[in-house]
Length: 380
Ligand SMILES: [Zn+2]
Image 1 (cartoon, helix red, strand yellow):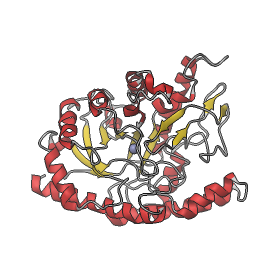
Image 2 (tube, rainbow, N blue to C red):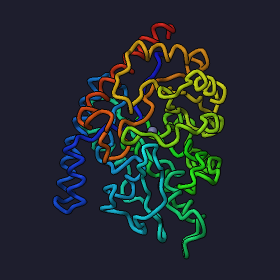
Image 3 (cartoon, helix red, strand yellow):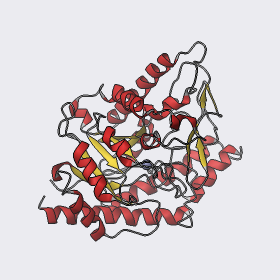
Image 4 (tube, protein in one colour):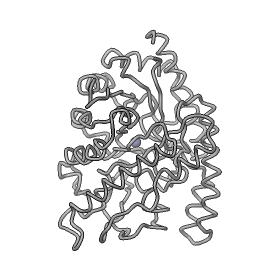
């Protein structure tokens, strides 16, 4: 079988759409008017992705406030926040360029999603002519909605985590039911868990194992047949062309991440200094049999934070090099991250989000082509 390729999920939102999000926050338009812009950008994303030859398409997450907050708020500024949440939660991440992203804070129970990703899948299925994928958020990210210390009166941490796992399970099941062929779980907090950033207390608490165990509580509710199509995405962040945890030794994560009983992994690598070590660690720690399913390693061969477009030959060479460490039947190709995980992303290194959209399509085309070339060279 040729080397499979898959995108993470997001694409830069056109500036017109980013302005519409702002206009909703400013009370200048209503939600229906924002949705009109979201739908237009989603349709454009799907059409253009289909032209690249991408196997599974997404709407580029044009309808989502972010990869992490789509279930609980309509915009990053908190317009349309779900019940029992306030805007002033923990930092999710402080990025290398100094900007940060903050999560809402849970104020009481019960915790419930207001939006499930299957809503997007349904709309995308109606547009796409081929298979659709959807990215969802991990419980390990949303557990940070609960205050780091102490308990919320009347809503224990235990009860919250039970409710959270149920919501995430429902999110994934509904995506499959709506027709998604692949569902990948965003796990960018994995590498960040070992950051030990004094400005961001949760990164000092050695939470990686807790994250993995919590995520497996959900993943283990699925059969091996289902888990073949449930993925995990890891990266050091990718927002406003900046990262949050590229300085954390990758082995701390990669030596544990494959404990997750998922069938495939979308693994940032193109922006690593030492790619060979990443290939080796993936080969070493990924499992041939994760409770009934082989773990396929999709190696990042495209850097969405850099406007320079990779060539198909570079992609080919990276995959051929990776195949020396990872069995080729468990090797795939991906991008290091979504191209814009947050709805407000000006893509400063690219000059504009509209230009960055064009660049993203060129990069994806190079990945698809490079994977074909590598498959030929490796005879698969
Ligand atoms: Zn990412």
